[in-house]
Image (cartoon, rainbow, N blue to C red; front, side):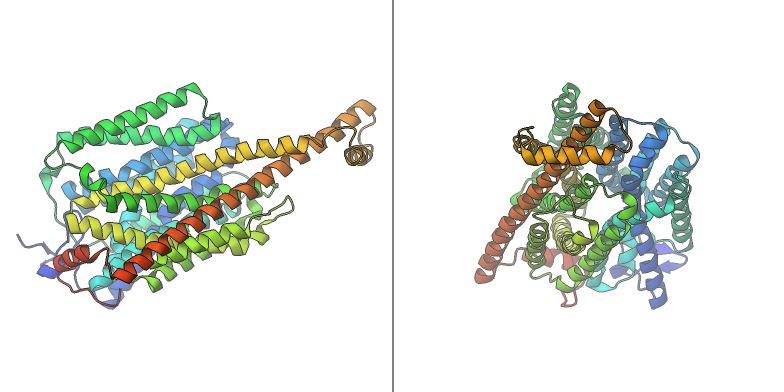
Length: 559
């Protein structure tokens, strides 16, 4: 049955590529620019959901008088919901259409903003974080659809890179804005900003809706619902395990139950899917070598990107730099990410899709290497260049990887886009959380080792130590008169300084570890690239032929 809208009948080449996606009519230039502008807003809004939460969490814990574990559950609630929504939303779009998907996304965004703005309670914040995660997942997909409407022909795939990249840029931008939004010292300014973004997105989506799509009403079955429930529950428990493990430490008994439940439920869901004739998630396709390599690459990208979130940002916290002093730092990071998006498009060659990956890995190695040897006097300005390089690499890497995965999925069948979304989403979310957890544990153990080494020299027989204690006591004598208390305070200052030096030395070790990981990965990637170049192997030849034949276009050199 021909697809019609407003009396217009869509031509065969304008039809949606798969159920749940919009049609692709030939828009006039002004309309394409409008779609691009709205896609930009949606992508940044998606990134803002995570960035605003991350940056405001310490303040939120203070406002609500939360302990570390309660604060961890707020963060876990966000990632638990975000990790699962890409799979569910794919089914929603396919079975119930784009407009219902848009309404769900907007409702979630508005609900999250209003709940945070009006109700300042712990339980409400948990619900708001779940709603924010739902909104972030939906806004990302919508931003890609809107971006793709702004391009023509095979260039539509550029919208995929733009949407994903600009979403990532939104996170550091939000972190740079939060100190400016504090206003009178509370988070009302942050929540008001979120509400304003939600209203702006709502107005834009209603002012210029996406072209219609097609639906398959019976595509969502009871077995799909069972599989998704088990899968989502398992992934949620794994996210909670990785987030809370950093807070309560890994030997806590109930963490073991979270891990066992997460692995068990996820495994049961995948087993059910492996026995179905038309699975929601094609487990067999997800485990073929090419897709496993894709998943490993995605996880590696997230691990190396932890150099920023756990490494550089953590280091600044260790040396006493507050969030208000980090605004320029995060602007530099955002600029690096934006440069990475542009660089990805410049270097993107569908006939040599792994070339930007090599450059990105080399940049990861260089950025981490430049930060080896940091000290307690290190300040954000000294990390601007290295962090710009790391930020650039994070999105230079992501674009080609995303495009490769999408091509492999579409070549198999449009239905495999859901399996691709699951692989990509999990590699990013769980990879990021696992990286943060592993590197945090590494920092803990290395701090302990460095502190033990420093403690060997912290004896009263050490003349240098005795002199430091006397200097501290002299500086404190103006406010303290009790000699015992004075001596104790002077010693505690020495101890605190030793702890800070040990922590900073651990961060230097982390940067060395990440530099080594990135360097080895670069060498492997270059060797494989040279091998394929020598034997003229095109790893996506079959996939490109199928996808572009289905699109009704020939592969062109402009992508």
